[in-house]
Picture: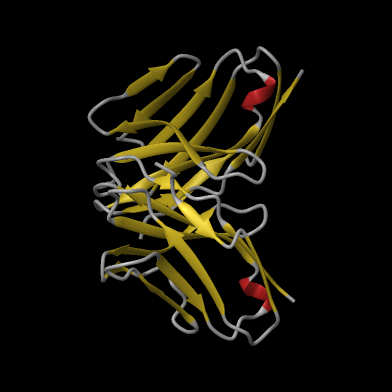
Length: 115
Length: 111
């Protein structure tokens, strides 16, 4: 089992461009979570998805951010028209069951830099 | 939503001493409290967790205590070693599906 795979590891975008971050959960995991980590700060919950469903997006900014977890393929976090303040590390985590009943495993993260 | 506060933000201890990190949470319905360790440039990894039906859990040099009445929980690391140096995050669940994290404690173990 390769673990939670995120790509790219590093992403540089100019202001106004789109950023697409991919997350492949561990095999057998159907619960995916995205977190944002600003430098020297904690992990901030963004969105929780199951296959083809967004369960909780209460932590997602209302504009420019979207997430999906299609039936086939990785989960995608999309940031449109990026701004400097979007620069951060974005981590995804996956779990077999609900997070309170099983461990959530994190990916290596994608470090987004907006120039 | 859940609010998790963590203290201290930085902690330096001599090798062999103990380290204690404390967290408080706001939602009395929270019942799952994991701790994650994140080494520089790496992913957070679960090191220990506790559920609300117990007050203490221990795994070798690491222990976690929970006081549900006061809504706080703590991580204790004994006989610290240089490889314990990392950022530690506490978390609490909101419902079955969401984890809310504290802001982290940067632990430095001085050889």
